[in-house]
Image (tube, rainbow, N blue to C red; front, side):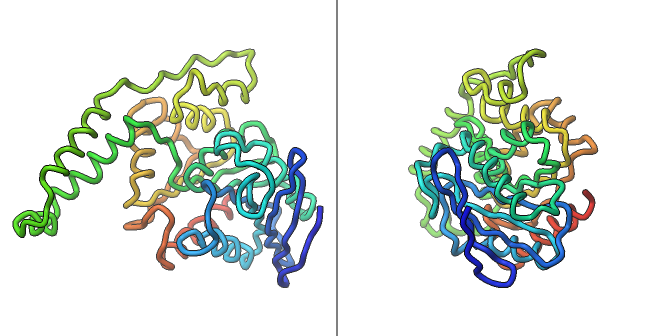
Length: 300
């Protein structure tokens, strides 16, 4: 492992993962809490624009005494290798936690903070690592063709119909009726498609990893919720109120009684960032996410 001091509290590191070299940034205050945060981002991203969220969050938590480690998975950013897809980065997350805890020996437990498919990846990984005691899941990715169509119809088209701006556009002749109805028709066809694969009955003799990773028998929503079921730690859900990815997750949770019951248990907390988009592109939204995360971390 190689480190390069960037500032008083930030250090760039390289660390191994399956014969490849990954790059991470450690945010470490002088006095650290016993709980640290590993950030798992959603797919290859720039570190500017709306995705500056991760830098802002890490620095805000570090200023409050929470050590944070953010890193590039294989094939992402400055790390080596090929990106294996969000549902196959267990080795990357494990290597990042290894490096994090080696660098900060005072840590006793780890929380994974994940956005979008990074949140889904955290659900797949967490049940298999006893060091992980908590998850912060931000607008989790549970995309299916049918689920996306349902969310778009329910949360986009209905809101447009009730919008005064929409009708002003219609009456001004600035609305393409043909294209819009064609799009709606396609969505209705997708929405009426085959239902999602049912959750396979858990095999008592199978390992947690086997149950969660059975992609051939479980749909993506089922895999995510199965991971949450198997995970025994605390979970904070952060939901953007104006995000279709978040809306699809909420809809998927509400459709199945077992999922509603799971998210309603004492292990789960939920907060909504009003009017926020998927990546919290306004500074006020970034600040709110950091504050909500910090408040929850203090309860662990």
